[in-house]
Every structure is written in C-alpha cells, then in structure tokens.
Image (cartoon, rainbow, N blue to C red; front, top):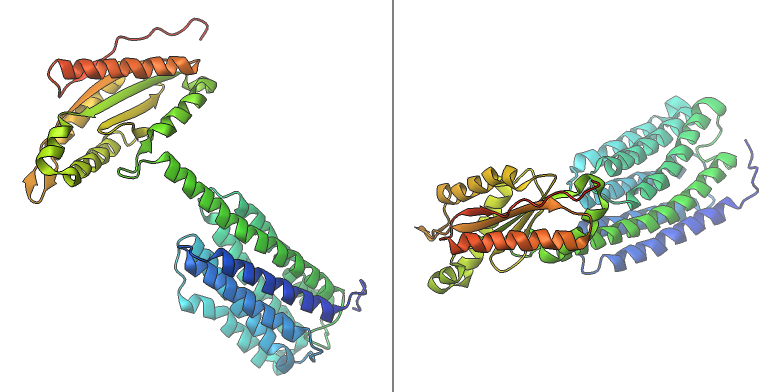
Length: 391
C-alpha cells in the first residue's frame, strides 16, 4: 500500500529523534537534585535509546531482517527502560528478566524470518511492541496514587498502542504478502505521526506527573506535624472552613487531649525524651482512633481529634480506652519506664458557620481545663450544644 499523505518519512524519523533528544535533556534537568533518580535516569536513557533507533531508521535502510533488526531491538530496549522508569516512579522494582523477555522473543522472530516470511515477522514484532506498551499503561493505571496527570500519560501511550496494533493487522490481515519489513506506506506515516504525538504528549505528562507529585508532597508537608506525622493546627483551621459546607457533616465532635505535667518530663529527662513521648502518644492515638483520620497535634503537648457525625458521649468510651492504653503500653526509654497521663475534654455540636466550630473547639478546651482542675488523668464532657433549628 503506497503512501497517501505524501510525507517525507525519513524527515519524520529525524524530527521524532530530535524531539526525543529535547525531552531527554528536559528529563535530565528535571531530575537534578531529585530523590527519584532511578525514574529520571531511565526516562533519559529510554529517550536516548529511542532517538538512536529513529536516527538509524532515518537513513535509507533496506527492509530485510538484517536491516531493521538493530533499530527495532533498540525500540524494545527503550520500552524496557521506560517500564523500569515508570515502575520506579510508583515505588516498584523491576526484575531484569522481565525486561529482557520481549527483546529475546523479538530476536527469535528475526532469526526465524527466513522461514516465516515478512508478513508474519512484521506482525509479531509490532505485536510485541504493543504488549510492552500495554504493560506500561497497566502499570500506570493500577496505581492508586491520586495523580490526575497519569490519565494524560495513559492516553499518550494509547495513541501508539492503536498505531502499533494497526501495524499488526497490516502484516497479518491487510498485506499478508509484504515484500519488506519496513514498507513505506500510509501505515508507516500514521505510525510516525502517532509517534510524534506520543513523544510530545508523554514527555509533557511525564514532567507534569512528577511536578504534580511534588506539589502533593509539599501540600502534605504543609498539613503535617513533622515530629508526629499527625495533621497540624493549620490543617484543622483549613478543614473548619469546609465543614459548614458539608450538609452530612453538620454534627461534629471535638476531642482535646493534653499530656499532664509535660514540662516536668522535659526537665527531668530532656527534650529528646519529650519528643519521643509525643511520638508515643501520637502512635497510641492513631491506634485507638484508627477509624478516624482527623487526628492533629495542635500545640506543644496538645492533640485534637475531630469526629464528624458523633455526639460527645458516644466518643467518651474511646477516650477512656486511650487513657487505659497509656497504662497498658507505657513509654520506655533506655530500659526505664517514663510514665505519663493525659487529660481529655470533649464537646460536640452542630456547625453551620465557622464561628460555631470555633465555639465547639473553645468549649472542648474548657472541658479539658476542667479535667486538669479536678486532678488530671480524667475525661470531661462539655454540656451538649442543641442543634440549631431548621437542621
């Protein structure tokens, strides 16, 4: 089938090779000083290998197995590098054998070329390329990390999947008596156009997905207390702006927890031990209140648990369970127990305005101070706030 788009295919091979080099340079700069060096290293490597393959294709090579073997082998190696990069990005290692399987199969297909002919060999090679691309798409799609850019990346790979599968059909269905393994026809032109789209789109989205993760990490850092890993006061302040807008979360319960005589622990054992006590307390809070993820450190030794949809009295048993856990699982430092207790204040109410949340928080604080005033190591509940009319 002759070319229908009248495009200079050698020039298109060259343009794609240049695009790959440009994005390889972009990936190299993007990876400078980054922790995920494996991702960037293999992204650069895959683009360099692809660029060499396209550069070889840009010459007027013959369509025999000997002529197309090397550039095709480089394509398989480049796709293997790309798979390693993407799996590394999502935190997975890649066994070397899994990357070598398809290039070995492709090599066998070329060795059998004299016996199976152009069409079957052509179809097998493009089918193997399709399999590698689908594997990459699967790796991206099954990961649970919330990254919007990954869907653009999947679409970029889907373009070349369709193009490669079309080449499979060309060899096995449309042109079963091919005279060359590199036919200069409309299918090749469509494949080169798809490659140009893929290189540009996948390059842009590969940079975008890394940038998006960096933003998510910065947002997480901004919302988390660096010592305990719990939410911080600012995250609670931010959340309190959203709560009144959620109709199904109008009822909220605020639990305030304060470590008793924390200053004495610092004075007697040092600030390093004090920090360790805070982390121990945070871990027990996460264990006891594991069904609720809104646990924050809002002050030096003060913690808050925010539970939507619960009244104060229904959370009191959990608070008592937490106090008991501190006794059952005491903090131990250098073989010695460092005992400590907590005081707890609880208040619940209905939130329609931000000021109402602030009032509940303030009342939970009042209950906490009452717990301290009556001897500490106890839980106090602020009297129930009635639901506003109309709810």
